[in-house]
View 1 (spheres, rainbow, N blue to C red):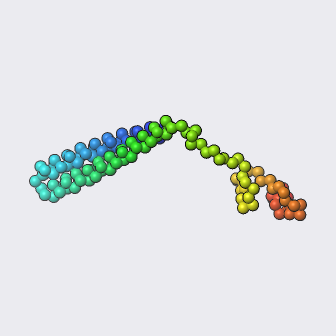
View 2: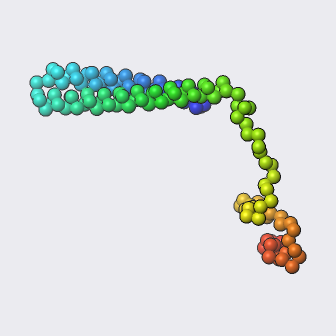
View 3: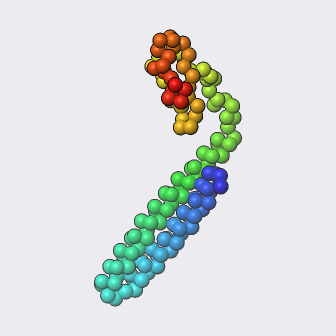
Length: 128
């Protein structure tokens, strides 16, 4: 799944969940109004407040994913060739502070320019 599709589906999901929490908040407020028992009335009002908070949270999430979806549209329309770097160096500069570390299983790096008397110091155990 492409991020654009994910953003679109997620925004739709959060809008639907927000509607559900809104309906539940409304139902709990209605039950609180019709309740005679003060304890139950307070419980319904608390539940309505919680559902209202969740409704707002999901609305924020939906807005976030809508913005993400819009930004992916912009990047698809943009000319990415304009963003390509122009100062790429294919060769590592000659710097004595840089040291090549081969990956595990890779052949050892060739060391050039080592005087003969120090050649054994730079030899790999397999070569010695």
